[in-house]
Length: 451
Image (cartoon, rainbow, N blue to C red; front, side, top):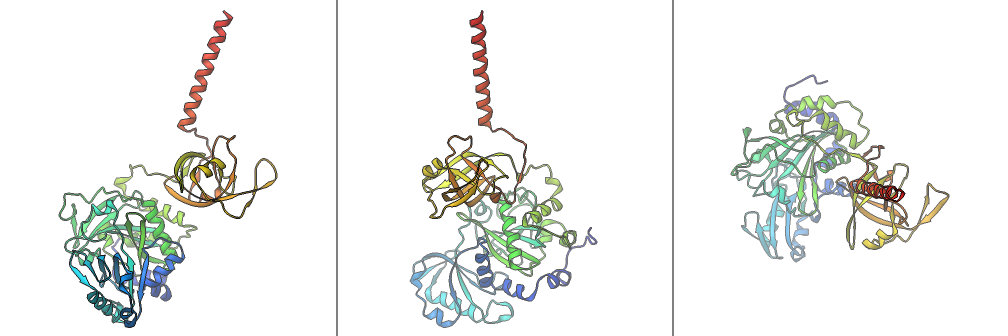
């Protein structure tokens, strides 16, 4: 139970949460964008692609700038508060344009990198490393909310539980930066639904996004479950017990983890109108067995009361579920059977051929429910189940004589609950109705012939 309803202050944050939960080695890794990115890639957590690394002045002088094309972002590895970040567009090897269409030459770009290497933007002004990342193409949904800069989501995660979140919108005051201290807008987010609640700008409440008539309350954040999943995964991978995870939305790639913060700011409390300390105390010392458990707990504990009547898609699967399978020749929607009695997934031979899925060189020994073990071919398959994309190796078998062309085994049901009660699909209901009508017609004919 919470023992305090006061807002969390900086001294309390440092003493109660950062010092005991964030070990020096984990903080050192989080403070370096390069080390963080390498670790995220290793753990297969989506993050913007790293294109170049400059460690010395010689690296800059010897670099062939014609290797870079299009758009990219320059940033210091140990920068803070958004300092030193430079977005470059339309780069042709000699020059490009900054955010806001101001031109930049190769010499000016090199001068920016030299400043980063000399520690102009790093913590304690120590020598730094310069990174060039692939530029995030802001998704159309987020682009509508901010005409300048890249909006992001900040999620505070403690002990594998998301405890508070906000949308950070760049404004004309922040010059395209999503940092609240520089004039960005903070908008609180309900953890259960992913719907925004209230906004603050320079510490004061705002009902509309600056320069627009768009209300800050009621915006639905896309792919909210995936945002929370990546945030908790990043916190766990960082080995920080208390962390702020920044997530951006790319038009093609979806949510990407941009940064992991060992000392996240406290204005998120103003954006949510709630005490961060109270929420942290509610989950302190709890045993959280899995990421899914932590996310579900955060949604239940910190749901907005005024949004309690909004229905949220659950993680409960029926025995029969619609599935979209992707392949080189296109995609196909089918009805698959969810079978917790089977360990792995199996797919019909006809579907493999129809979608052009490539077989693995190695076969797999499968134990069937009808007899002894048998050797089957395997195929790598990507399918969408209940809004989640799943990649797996499936065994291939002839299922033409069976009702469902695909069986989803328990290996691919992580994070889901399965309701064993059978619920027929609309297609099955229609077939049953047709069979019933045919049977009634046949009975009617028999009665007529008897007469």
